[in-house]
Structure formats: C-alpha cells, structure tokens
Amino acid sequence: MSKGVLLIVSGPSGCGKGTVLQHVLKNEEYSYSVSATTRAPREGEIDGKHYHFMTKAQFEHCIANDKILEYTVYCDNMYGTPREFVEEQLLRGVNVVLEIETEGAFNVKRLMPDALSVFISPPDMETLETRLRGRGTEDNETVEKRLAKAREEMLLADRYDVVIVNKENGAEEAASEILKAVEAKRNSL
Ligand code: 5GP
Image (cartoon, rainbow, N blue to C red):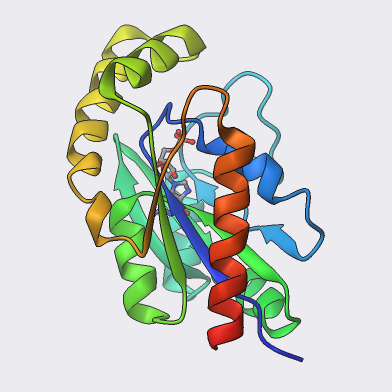
C-alpha cells in the first residue's frame, strides 16, 4: 500500500481555510492532525477536536519528550504538531492535513520533503479584514496583530508548492483543487 501524503495547509487567519478543509476532510482517506496549543479555547472549541489545549509547562514537557514534530510561537501562543499521529496515519496510507502557519510549514517541508505545501490566499486584504472583524471572536488588538501577521504571510505564498485563491463562495472549488494536487503528488511518490 502506498504511503499517505502529508498535506501542509497555510493561509492567513480569516482566509477561510477552515471551510475549505472541511470539504477536503469529507473524504475518508484524509485525516486532520489536531495540534497542541497554549492558546485559550475560543467559544465552541472542543479539546481534542479543534486543538489539544495545554499549559505552557505541558507543552514544554511534550517538546522535551520528542512528541512534537514541529512547533512555533504565533501571536504570543505556542502551537505544535503531535508527531505520533502523523507518522502512524501516513504509514497506514491515510493523507494527513496539517493546518499550520508559515514557519511550521517550511520546517515540515524541510523534515519531510515529500509533503505537499498549499497556501490558501484571500481574494484581497479588504476581504480578509472584513472576515476577521466579522468573526467577532477576537478583540481589536488581536485582530490588528493577526492582520499584520497576515500581511507578512502573504509575502511567503510563492514558497509553497501550490497557491489557491479562496474566492467568495469558492471553498468547494478550492477544496477540489487541493484534492487534485494531492492525487498528483500521491501518484508521483
Ligand atoms: P488560531 O489561533 O487561529 O487557531 O491559529 C493561529 C495560527 O497557528 C494559524 O495560522 C494556524 O494554522 C497555526 N497553527 C495551528 N496549529 C499549528 C501547529 O501545530 N504548528 C504550527 N506551526 N502552526 C499551527
């Protein structure tokens, strides 16, 4: 059986990557890697489903025990990919989705060059700002920080294997582009 593809997906906060990935994950040959984070849960977020929420001490313990494949600090919180789940799923032939920011994406690509990296871009910065503010889950200071971060991230898009623009109501189309790129990658391995 062929190994699964490690699919790295980045895109600024508010670009709609969550919705795109929901469509990708409807396919049973895909699984989602739940990250660890020290960020506080947002309303509605479930421990073990959206993230493994931990204290800084717990997170550092995982790093010390080599349980984290990669990690980064993003807007004052730690985020990392648990190693075991990813390795196990790939061996079973399942494609694994990592929804991570740019630094983590480049680190994973260096560690696992067969991974496919995809950047999801908003149609433009105004759309991104409207979506971020409209979400209403963050205070103004956090939104400003995330917008500044988004501008930085957009400059790195061309270092990804594939860039996909998530148009208004275009999540399904974006997802099908991703599925095609993963299939092509899988056939090339
Ligand atoms: P949020 O707080 O909006 O859930 O996530 C903030 C950023 O952290 C997003 O860009 C998200 O993709 C990224 N992120 C989530 N989990 C991980 C991870 O395990 N590793 C890295 N490097 N980034 C992550």
